[in-house]
Image (cartoon, rainbow, N blue to C red; front, side):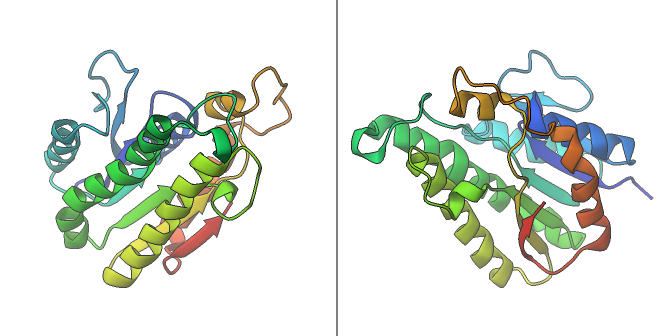
Amino acid sequence: MNKPTAIVTGVSRGLGKALAEGLTDAGWTVIGDGRTLTARQRGHVPGDVTDSWHRGLLVETALETGRLDLLVNNAGILGPSPQPFLADYPEAELRRVFEVNVVAPLALTQLALPALRDHGGAVVNISSDAATGAYPGWGGYGAAKAAVEQLSNVLAAEEPKLRVWWVDPGDLRTQMHQEAFPGEDIGDRPLPESVVPALLDLLATRPASGRIKL
């Protein structure tokens, strides 16, 4: 039997990189992407998930393995750093935050759904506590993640044969989190690798679709 196959977006750093490595070590075939990848390697495809041709290539590459079991929509952007209050949030930046964090993941999910249905697969959408909390300065990113959570909620209702989880991994020591706190020491936050075992356990136990706080 073919090994299970996953698409993981945003594998060039942070949680995406850690999860791709963890899945690979657990016996999965991982097709990843990233804007800063310079060449195709280990099944990863350089590119921007907001580009329709790139999304198509990701799914096509995954299907070359003969199956698709998992889509992890991890790629995202914070927006301006330092983050502005909503009164000063640039409209163009807000559109970009929603394009990367909301529109692109849904578009990729749409392409992947037929293959995921064939194997009773799963969709993992990476979220944040900013989706549910009122944190000054987090309005743009938080609103985008709130949209991701509601899209996930509806998708779960529409696709009862799949598992759809919207996952809040908590504050991690990543470049994006550092951008949210420029000039501050975030060394007390756990590394992304610390939550990979919980994500792998999620895939193994397959609880009902819903919001997961790691």
